[in-house]
Length: 353
Image (cartoon, rainbow, N blue to C red):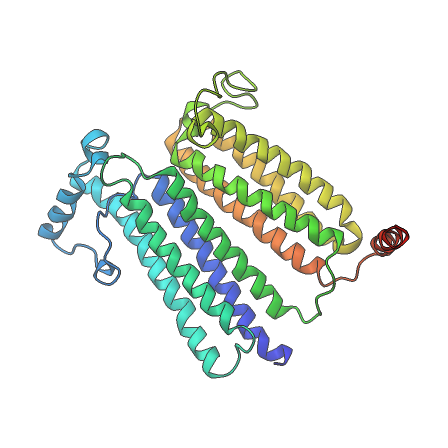
């Protein structure tokens, strides 16, 4: 294909990526408003239409009243208050359905016009991943309908990580189809970006654990965790690092500091390859840390936690996008003289051995 024919495909993929970000925002609002269990059934087709009359609302509210969350935590909710949390969960699910159409319809058109040559397998894989994300969303919701008052934090993490993989892949493919330059051999900068992305995905998991366990509420302090750098009693049981709220705090903060250090090193090492564009990664990670601190110290104020928490989550995805774009750019820039020299020296040493 010619570069001009690839451009619409690239723009489509990036537009779908933007829609995924909107979905993550809606998911964050749904989670932070405790709306996620308000719809107790999964109806992929009929669920598009919300209740339209008093009888329908009474039935939906009655189903919510049967689950542990209402019985143990939310028995004070009125019908009007229930309608608010129902809206967020319904809108979140509706946007997911629209997102599927937004992907499928252009994909079919591009396929028929022959514009997906070399991309058909990956397009189908993206479609399957989006479907898996929807199924995982219901599996997550189902975990909170029987015994738990909230969804499983492990399933929440799986749901979020699938969204992050989907977003990252869409951005990577979108950039590939917009950038006409050929891909070169991996450089030090591209390898650093790949390593940082790996650490960031681990951080995403612990961020989801923080959210699912509502761990920020047990230690709304910074820089210490309730006055301690390492909380006491963390080694008392198996799985403490993902089940104990204070331990999750410690891991999440530690990974955050590690990411900042890694980004600073990446920013310095990639100056010859990425130039001024590398500043974006540094700026986003600085904003992410600042928002993380603000979320922590404002956690006991629900209104602040809602919007700061959503901003923190979205900025984390922004850091991932910045790293994906930086990696793609680094793969399209010829290695610097220093990198070439280092490789040649390594080859010579191996040859001598």
